[in-house]
Image 1 (cartoon, rainbow, N blue to C red):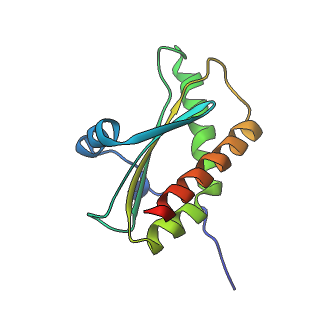
Image 2 (image 1 turned 90 degrees about the horizontal axis):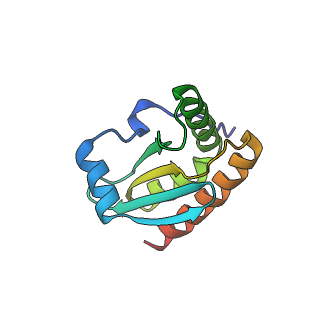
Length: 130
């Protein structure tokens, strides 16, 4: 019986300042509106996928709105990440990904979920080419 676990544990969150700096200086980026995705792939610490979610204070002044958007992005990622995780593990890669929300208004979950699927498909294709 195949059980897929939809978890987003703390070990998958990117919180190392060194890794974050390297991600934004050496990483590559693409845009699937409303999310700008920055990624960095290496093979130094294999089978690791770490994610950072950012919503700029400049566009959403109130923390309530920023936190809601981050919660929606986290949920969309959590539900759709399994195929990307499998590609990273099978390719023996390390991948850091940052999702930066660039829209001026809040989107609903269904729109965000569709965009997240597109982003993860692109990342999966990029990771499988490594």
